Structures are given as C-alpha cells and as structure tokens.
Image (cartoon, rainbow, N blue to C red; front, top):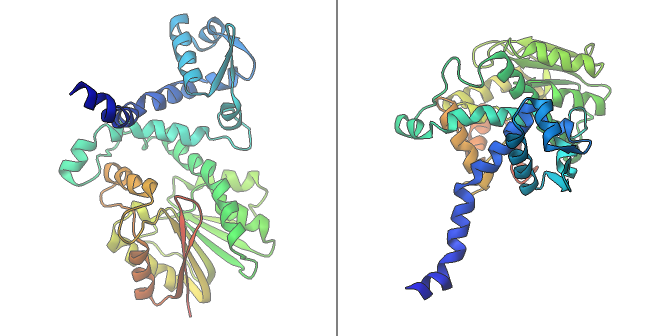
Length: 335
C-alpha cells in the first residue's frame, strides 16, 4: 500500500492541493492591494517601514510581504522588499497596464463565491442590496475594472477587424466607454453612442472627457432590455453583456439591435462563448459559475446559441473569430 502511494498518488494529490489552496494566494494579493502596499514597494522597504506606512503590526507586514515573495510578485534583498516586474507593471497606479480596479472587483466577488452552495441549491444569484458590487465604490471598481481589461481587448479587436467604413457606433452596455474611445481614436470619421445604466453614465463621461472625445461620444442612461436604443447605427457592439442575461432576454436584445441598425450594419457580440459541446474554454466554463452566484439567470453561451439568436432576428453572414483564449467575437450583418 505504501509503495502504491509513493508510486502513483503524489502527483494527483499535489494537483488537488494546488486547486484547493488557490484562495490563499488570491487573498494575499487582495489585502496587499487594498492596503496600498504595491506603490510603497516601488522603492526598497523593510517590513517595519511597510508596517508603519499602512498601520499594521510589524509581524503582519513581514508575513504578508513574505507571502508576496512566495507568489513572485515581490523580491527580497536582505531585509528589504521591492516590487517584481508583474507588480510594477500591473499594481502601481498610472502604469499603462494597471489592473488595480479589476483586482478590487475580484476581491469584492469573494463574498458571493463563498455562498456558492446557496446559489447551487436555489439555482439563482445570491446578490442582495448592500452586497459587494452594489455600493458606489464597488460599482466604480467594477466599471473601471472592465476598463483595465478592455483597453487590451479593444486593441485586439481592432487588430482583427477593419471598422473604417462605419460611421455611428452603438456601444451597448458600454460601461467606461473604453471600446468607444479606442474605436474613435482609430477611426476619425466615426462617432459613438454609449448606452448603459444611469449610474454608470458619469463614469463613462469622465472617461470620454479624459480622452478628449466628449464631442464625438454621446452617453445615454437607460435599461437596454426595456428602453429605446435609438436608430440608424451602422455598427453595434455588445461586449461582455450577454453572459449577465438569460437566453430569452438575449434573444429579445438581439432583436432590438437589429431594429436599431441601419441596413448593411454590423453587429459584434463579444463574450466568453463556449464550444458547442460545452467542453471549453476552461475560463468560460468557470465564469458561468460567476453568473450563477451573481445573477438570476446569466450564463456563458455556445456559439450555436448566439447564432440562433442572430438568425432569428434576421441577421445574416454570421461568423466567429477567436479573439483571446477566453473571448470570441460573433459577427452578423443586417441585409
């Protein structure tokens, strides 16, 4: 029996252990980010210096800093700690690749994920008023977290699609207007309308002002499932929206996009689309559980499901493009 354990079980045991203790590394990053540790470590600091700066006991600072060393986010030289390349690039504000808002959003999600058992038993989301994700700070973390990610995926999208022929973009559920800004910066003849919930619009307007595009981007607040979207758009982007909604709502939303679109217009649906047999991608399958704990009926959808919605609406020439290992584009056109 002992030989069997030595010969065959060690690798699967280690693999399982890595999975079940994964939350430990996440929590170390979350707490370091929330306390403002990473900006401090752009210069070498001792544990005592960090403790004094953030108001912790020295023991707490030392243990957390050593944890960051274990995660290869921080380097140690003698008694001094300093950011490694990933922390410097992604966790120090004002860096081009800053990811602090999305890290804060993931931190906010932990309370819901801790209630997954409840969501599995009920079949619906466990989010309630007052939960993380609902207050002004959490909303801002979420919306600007989307910008942290979208500033890269927008460039990826523009790298695979030539949108120079289009003149009026509807960025539906456009959040911080990151895609609209990127599209207009690439295409000087284009203008855009960003449509999102009223509480999101001030953030979108802030971002468009910072980009100097407030004269070319209109921001409209409303409920995309019930309110009028306008008309005459020759390009509509629905980025990372359908996973938050149920299939019937998505089918109706696609029809609304068709109705709002000018003939010859292009609809781009970008989302974590899964393979038709739901065997991958792995990220998309796991993300569906985020929709279980956070929404009433959200999910990640197959390419075939999205194709059926656009076909039923009257859109044609459907095709899929793999954008990243997680994201795919579904393109279709109004005749």
